[in-house]
Length: 195
Ligand SMILES: Nc1nc2c(ncn2[C@@H]2O[C@H](COP(=O)(O)OP(=O)(O)OP(=O)(O)O)[C@@H](O)[C@H]2O)c(=O)[nH]1
Ligand SMILES: [Mg+2]
Image 1 (spheres, helix red, strand yellow):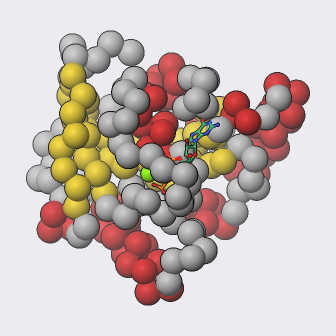
Image 2: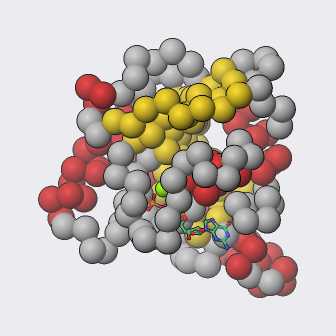
């Protein structure tokens, strides 16, 4: 993907800190540690634009990035990860309110990319989120992450299994690896289809 410029914009901890909507947005969401920040970095070909960490639950804020292409400008939004067991219930509630405030009321949101670790089963968290997005007419695709962690045979079997669990059409599930770059052109195509 040809990019003219990529830059960090700002972080927000609550809705009154969200930037005024001015460009089409793509949001990245999923379980803590699933690889949201890594995949975002890989899409824009920058090593450490979005902060990644081996400590789950690191991204507690919403982070905005401006992606300028020759033909247009998009904003990428890195959302805080959910489902991290060590987080107190009150904080999970806070997470949910914050994410829903964003996803449910953002006119410029064009696509939610829900990330799912290839090695895990799809849980109720993901299926409920997909339903919640569909009810609000927010288009979504699923990026299966960390595909480099399985050898090709097991990878293919697991992709097939998760596609069945998700019950989405084939064009809404993309197998990716931020480490190896698998699926990056396909994910860009999915983004472009929704702008
Ligand atoms: N092998 C491999 N490791 C990955 C890949 N993507 C992410 N990781 C690793 O997984 C860990 C978590 O990645 P992050 O990108 O920080 O995950 P996140 O979803 O942003 O995490 P939170 O912000 O804490 O919710 C890091 O140690 C990454 O290096 C991948 O495609 N392959
Ligand atoms: Mg992150």
